Image (cartoon, rainbow, N blue to C red):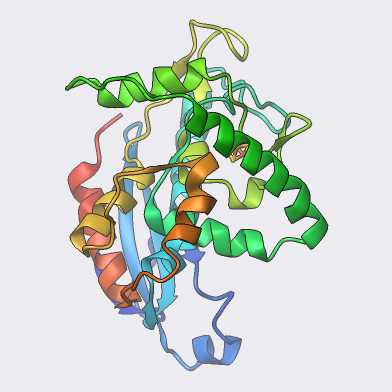
Length: 270
Ligand code: SF4
């Protein structure tokens, strides 16, 4: 990984993610204040080369979530693209909410970011969704979780959650009502197989790297995560209960450097 001035660099074709340019003024980018990180992710024997342009300013890890989402989307899209070329059938599409009754784990910064973004939605939309969130939260808290036994804790929790038959509070008329804001766990959950949606022969597509897990490790590295993960329906209540907690700020380059290092350690060949 390299952090360089955005204007320097070779001629190799790379996909650019100018993640911070929405919040940065265009003149600042032109003045050359933008730096970049380059990384490469192996996908079915090909390298997905990415360039992330950013302004090196102090941010909280929750402000960094859009960067993680954009990275996640690029990796998922490239994996699906290659998988389809290999003849895989991917039934996932807009309007299918089949998997939206599964457990969606989110990290603390993601919960904070989602809660902030939710507050920016039109009030009428918030009101409707808040009713569903409260319904899901109550239902979730009314059923005791299982007695957990190592080493299958994630699977036991996941099975327990599925048995609750609790549809995600953001699923409206079988579509994700917060699609642009949807958690990393939803972005990374793709199924493939020869059968259509909901068939047991389908498999979860294995990605070369989970950005969800990488962000979780990033939080550990910066001492920002006290919980491993929060279940989506109770995440808003969790944020509310922690609203006076102190949250650190870090330079964008520090976060990206660490994230890419974690990604390099976690990447598997698919
Ligand atoms: S957030 Fe959206 S995509 Fe994720 S489970 Fe809920 S409805 Fe489905």
